[in-house]
Image (cartoon, rainbow over all chains, first blue to last red; front, top):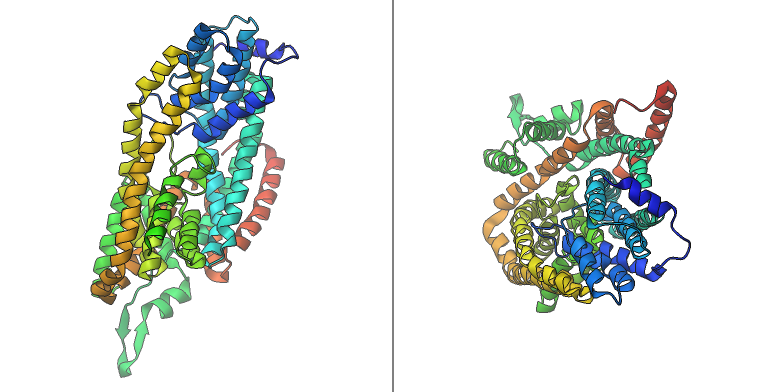
Length: 285
Length: 253
């Protein structure tokens, strides 16, 4: 990867910039909004990335059709990464285009290697951080309130996520634009992210455990007739007395075990349907 | 359900899969989630509280779903939006709604694969604009054409399903009778175990595992609900990390 070249270039960037703040924000917002609008199996987010670079290309190569053409061709290439973390690539590539216009020796390969070199690590941290940690934790935090019928819960969830997501995206875009790829990679390997993931894993586990107790419902309807017409209700007189929700815990661990063995979620769902139908008809549930 | 309400519900499903109003990933985290989609459908049908309850219950199934690298295991937006719409008009309970919503989510993945395939056909046009050096035309191939495709693929089926489904679901449920509804309720009560199992695949690891049981026990015996539980464990986690830091490093994760 030709990181060093770009970093040197970015580092001794002259004070005057060819791109206005508006160009940069517009490139970033186009990325945040339309990065996956034309998501496809051939180029993934390639067309979206070209779209985000359009404002930069328009500004820098206004009077140069040949350079404009070349720039567009190098930004329509395959790219696939995480949206907010990918903002760092948008910022960095915009800075590189700016340097190229000022006369730096940057060929198409330099752009391609920067993009392909960063998209993997950024998605590797970004996807699990958002989809595996931040969204589930925020959802779980508000889901109990929502199930109780509190309409503020979905609204608050939406606002908190939106602000957090765009703040991180903007910060990374500026980091990419001002500091270059070395700083980006440094940030990704920073121990702080690992610490946050570890901590989130602990809270996540605890709250998911709480979800099992609160929202997985398995109740047996089995009653055993005893002497003198008295009924022994298995659920309330045995299971609930030992541990409320013990059947739910067993079911959840069973599903987890099957999924971990590689059984598809569709098959597990079908199994639950079958068990429920049979159990429901025979009076087990 | 009126035609107008069905149009709004179809529109809601389209928006959840479009860049507007919160951005690509913004929508995927907000409107796409049944927690939010259910609330919006509730607003449209004049009962935001029931919508929120239904949506949140359906969302239990999808907490840990991850889409990465272009794959989509299930379309939770269709499950949340259409599922809530049918549940409210049919007057069914939240657990039964979840049992109806999950197959809708599986059906919805057709749309995801379909639109990514069709989008591939737009790439040559983008190449053409690049060859001509016309950045001002990129919006046609990145917004107009793919969004029209998505609109046709999402709005029309969802609108039709909401309108006709809404008209007949009450009769269908009456015809099915109490036993079917009771069994749907049993299925819906158990299904969150699958969604939670999927979440556990991602996080049930190493030293964090014991906290899953601790959370379960606190909620099961002491009836602590989720919000206070999260706050309690936030403190426990901080203490735990501090003690661990003293022992030396956060290495073995």
